Image 1: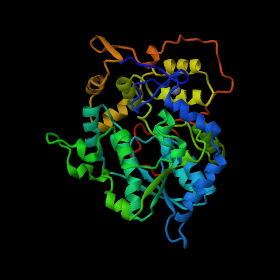
Image 2: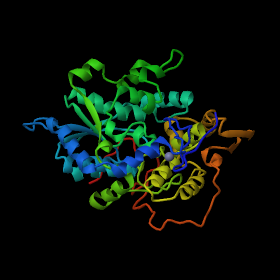
Image 3: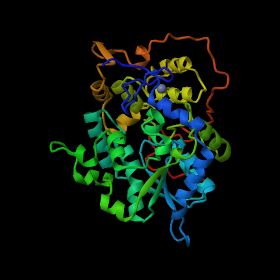
Image 4: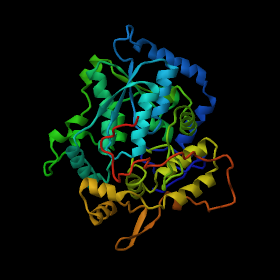
Amino acid sequence: MEIKFCKRCLYSSDHPLGVIINDEGICSGCKIHEEKDFLDWNKRFEKLEKIVKPYRSKKGENYDCIVPVTGANDSYFIVHIVKNKLGLNPLLVSYNKYFNTPLGIKNLANLRIQFNCDILYQNVNPISVKRITRKTLRKYGNIYWPILAGHTVFPVQTAVKFKIPLIIWGAHQGLEQVGMFSHTHEVEMTRRYRKDHDLFNKEANEIISVEDDLKEKDIWQYYYPNDKDLRLNNVRGIYLGNYIRWDPKAQHEEMIEKFGYLTSSFTRTFDCYDYVDCYNYMNLHDILKLYKHGYSKVTDHASREIRFGRITREEGLNLVRKFEKAEPQYLNFFQEWLGIESKALIFLMDQFRNLKYWKKIEPRKWIFNGWSKLNSEKNSYNEKSNSFSFINNNNFKYKEKKDGYITIGKGWP
Ligand SMILES: [Zn+2]
């Protein structure tokens, strides 16, 4: 099948979440993005207020809702809306991803202090996490399965255990990126979406196979609660992006200004705000995305900025071509953590190069023919957007001298 590109953004018909390109050549993500400019967002926010109202604990003897948080990615904004705008008392829950940067630990500690919220941390034992990571890396070329699984299941388990039925998430990725739903569908959290998209169609029990050392005892923490428990407790998860005009760049900048959110530059994208809590997301995980899918996170970031009209399509493509080539950093941290040799890691990674987008010309030498190459537009260097920049107010390492992951962060005063 011939690959088609959206005329407005940089997505192609081969997007793993599924993109539909219409007769005018515009993709479903861009079409749904148009809603941001014509929906009545005041009305939509009023609707959100109505939805959450019955969940307010009458006597203040339980939390009103659960908010999943990390040391990055919209967490400040979500808690700001929940606590300061909706006036709810949330229980924050955070799954320890183990690839923590000092900056992420600092951001999470500061979040707890700024918003004066209780927080629950889940630390799954590192031996099991390493076993799962080794397995998903070998079998699917993915090091992020335990993190995505943990981040999406721990809040739901907590909702059942503590009888707090409402979970509040930020934006819905399928809606934001590829326009899988309209904002007005008010889609909610489902087991199905988590499995199909967050977990690339592999539930916890499905990654165990008879021949390996991964066992039930390593994986049970990632099991989604059963339907009966969810029903009995009326658990539901809503997305703020359906009720608020979601703009991650503007929102992060507000959080930097108001609450001291810390940011960092990256070598593989121009966005300084997402994923600052993780050594791997924008490095090892991102290069694997480029190997498997022919594009990487910078294409997501550029497409988002094009849709908001802050850069042109041409400028976006230039940014992609510039950043996607960068070498991933901190692979040595990962090798040390997992106990894998550099050569073995590179060999494993190469197994996942998609031959649709990569051509082997000699041993360990590949030619890239991914989205940004197939996209027919030529590079042009004359255009510049005056107002387009991201605030870089810190860096990954923060003030910590230690090199490597902060497996358990102590927080900062
Ligand atoms: Zn598009």
